[in-house]
Structure formats: structure tokens, C-alpha cells
Length: 402
Ligand SMILES: *Cc1c(COP(=O)(O)O)cnc(C)c1O
Image (cartoon, rainbow, N blue to C red; front, top):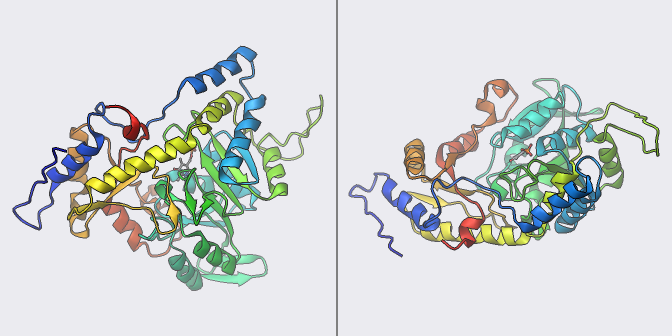
């Protein structure tokens, strides 16, 4: 390796050049610009999509939907999987099916993709933001416990926010960048307060915590198969659950609540048209065949980032939490505390170098539409936002011959 670390003449000065060089070593001669996360489709996906076109089964019926659901259920160990049009719709439906109603509050981390908060809003409910922990980059169970002790009260009808008067119905932990939340601790807090757990596992297909797949801890969970996720169906999502009755209802509710009948068109509630078309599911079947290879490649890429940043004094790569096996969906560079102010200068330099890095999503509590939502103190969320950037993480960056 030709890497010669540049020694900063002043210890306190951020060594921008050394970071750029380290990233260049990992990305080697990958074609610039290097995107943050790109899908990769192959001959198998082409074959399955062509089969949909040739047989005319491209839409809401066809064998690939059930096949895709079975493959995801088998890979995660979830008893039931219901394919949905995208991850946001999956989360929206899952929350409604869990009994989230207009004017309820739903707890979620302030740092997540906006879809988590949007799905809560789509259900007519109000997002309630709680802080994260550096241990997992996800929702902090201890902070949640302290916060609920302070702001909530148990009544016959459930848990209520004393300050807003609204019912708090559910909590949505998000396994950010594929790193699992400490689910034992989170489930214990949820149980203590009587909250339903819906996992946002959209970024964590293939990740496990204590050997168990992300997406199988909550009463329900959602996946996403958007183009930038671990596997893609173009757009797509899934609801996972072990509860048979919930699964049956989820299938019905997301298929316009149509009663099954040979010819009659009869519906028994206001349902949603949220199911995944067969042609997208066909892509998903092809992608699922390479899920483990994809996760292996992503872990290998993470290993390379970890290696070149090992011993760095200005920044480090975020390592999977204890007890977790992460899919490392997006690799995260964490600047040391004294260099938080350097984030944007580093991002500009990376972009000038053809490396499409990005900061974390703007924390939800800073977005105009969510600024006035209830929240806990959020010191870690703000610190994380100031100091983390995501680096290109497409699985083929580890495996392609450069
Ligand atoms: C991608 C994503 C979603 C939504 O998935 P879509 O399929 O894009 O609707 C929800 N939450 C998080 C954390 C995500 O990363």
C-alpha cells in the first residue's frame, strides 16, 4: 500500500488530507464519482423479470410475491412476511394495525430517515423524539426509561403524556446503518410502560443481535427494498410478524380490505392499496439469492475501512455494537469531539474527490414540520449529527476487480 500518513505539524489541526487518503485506499480505483450505495442486479434478476413479462404476471397477482415473502421469512426467521409497496407504506400500515390512532404519540429516535416520522404522521399520530446512544447509534433504552418516568402516567386507557395529554401507543426503534439496537433493554422498557414495539428494520436486513435477526424482536417490523437498501426491488417493503392473526389482518388491510371470493368484489373496511407488484417481487427473489453474499461483501468493505482508520487520531470508523453482527449498510466515520466543526469541510473535500459521502439525516426535531413535537433532551442526537458522516458502502466496492 502506498499510504503515507501525513503528520500534522500542529496536533490540534484536523488532518483532512490523511482522511481523504485513507478513503482513497479503500475505494482504490473505483470509478468516480463513487455513490453512497448503489444496487447491483444480475442475470438472475433479468431472468425472473422477463418471466413476469413473458407470462403477463406483472401486477398484483403472480407467484413471485409469495415466493419473495417466503424467502424473507426464511432468511430472518419471522413466521409471517407481507410484501408491501415500500418501506414507508409498510410502517404506516404496521402502525395502524398496531392500534395507533389519530392524536396518539409514537416514540422514535430523532436521528432516522424522515420516513419513520412521516409514517407516524400519516397515521394521524404525533412523533415523540427520544435520544440515541453511541453504543448502538440507535434509540437509547436508558434515556427512554428516564424520559418516560418524567413525562408519562399510566391510566386505564394506556400510557399518557402528562404534558400533552395524548396517549403514547408505540415505540419504533430504528437499527440505523444496520447496527442493531440493544433489543433486550428496549423490549424491557417497552414492556414496563405497556408500549407496543414496531421495529424499523429497513436498514438492517441480514443483521443479527445475539444471533437473532433484526426485524424479529418487535410485535411487528418493517423492511425496505428501495434502490439504496441492502437488497432492492426498485421500490418495496415488507411487514414481518410472528402473530398469525396480525399477519392475516395485515394482508387484508393492505389489499384494499377485499374479501376473498371467486368473483364478487366486496370490501369490509377502508383498506389500503399497498401490496407489492409481482414484477418487483421477482427482482426481490433474485436479490434474496445473494443476500448472504451481499452481507459478507459489506462486512468485508467495513473491515477495510476499519483497518485503514485503525489508530487514526482525528476520526474512526463506527464498529458494530457488542453482541451484534451488522450488515454495515452504511459505513460511518465519526470525527473526534474536537473536530465536530470540520464535518462540512471534510464533506466538501470528499465530494471534490468524487466520493459521495454525506452527513447524517438532519435530526427530526430540527425539521420545520417536526420542530414542535414532544421530545426528550437530545444531546447525543445533536452530537452524533455534528460528528458523523457516511462513506460509500456499495457491496461491490469490496468484491469488484479494480
Ligand atoms: C429507507 C427507510 C425507510 C423507508 O423506506 P422506503 O422504502 O424508502 O419507503 C424508513 N425508515 C428508514 C430508517 C429508512 O432508511
